[in-house]
Length: 156
Image (cartoon, rainbow, N blue to C red; front, side, top):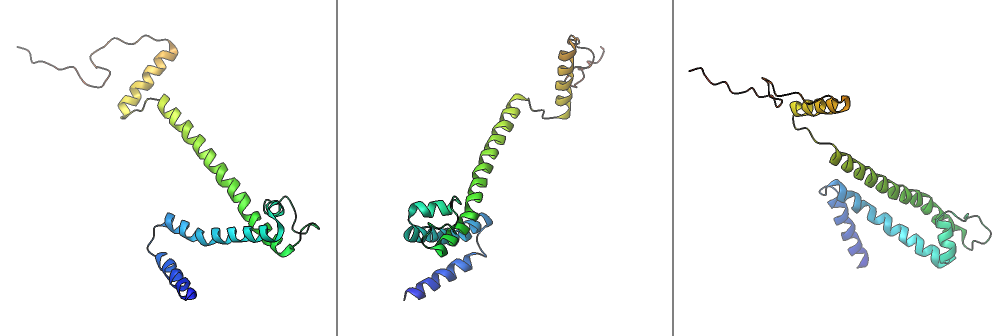
């Protein structure tokens, strides 16, 4: 009876792989590996004790060490740790760097005025150049700085 339910679960899991969007598919594919990893951790804790299991998992102790009681379980823990510990460190580092870059980009965007058009950007650049060179703002002439021409009234 239990085998039949397991088979139904597996069939549903396998059939959803073709319908689900990619991020959810990645999460769904990770579930069996996470369950397997937790099972190996508990197996190691049962046979080796939590302290030794943690030391082997975090690669602080070799599975060949003479103090290890069950080397087969220690090798499974070591292989699991060899894959998971660097992946975890890389994921945390990647998130931290991504947050830092995002904050810096937001701060830079807040400092710089955004130019909606090429004409506005040219006007801002000309103002910056004038300020750096210490030149006075030119008086309004026949062409208004925003690009529009003064209205011409017909002679009467």
